[in-house]
Length: 271
Image (cartoon, rainbow, N blue to C red; front, side, top):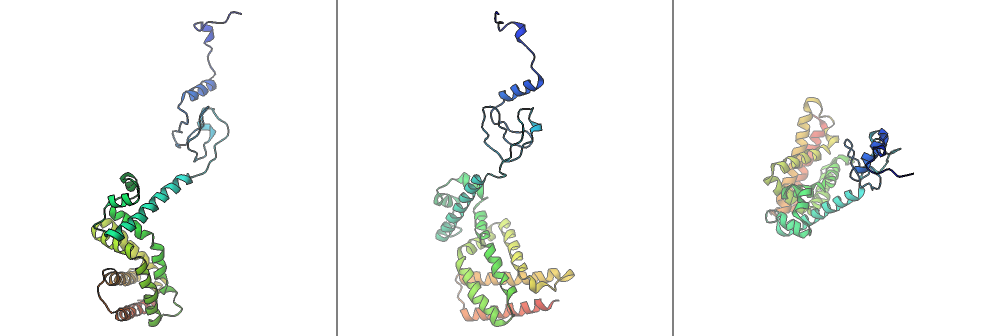
């Protein structure tokens, strides 16, 4: 039999619709993305570059059967992101401790991290934002600190003073850098100031057992009194322990113990 030439119209046999769909898929770029879900589809001769959802077959022109069931997240990318984030935070802490908040620049942090400004700004808005992020890392310890008075077996002045002496002062000594840069960032950036205020409210809420009777119309008053205790303690410790304002240690502890013991006693009795 003589083979048909390419120009012979008898060679142009119409394809079945499902075949046409299959050939159209072959002409698509490899690893095409589904238009709705954004998932990467495994096409003939292609390799998937992303597998993060389950893709129903009905969406794909009869090209595949079954579905692609894959992990929900790219844990490797998440790990890379977290490692870079933590590296910039650690380097920022070192730079702030060495140069001070106002003298330090984003360029100093980037150089210390051996990174780039593009990577820095992919993680943080600016210098004030990374200062706030440094403090965010110690929020769990902050909450634990203010949760301690709520767990006193008995509320006494001596117990309050021991908490101030053993736990509060140790906390401020350990996190002096984080607290110092946050306080200065609060003065420079209203957005950081708003976050700091909310953290103070969260700390005051850790005194919840003392606020149990402050409900209804009295709820806000009780929370405000607890918040003022927290802010007063922070300011006293900041000027005393961070800025180095001279005070007699025993006298300061006695005064703070009196203030906290009396206010906690008042809060516990209710409005």
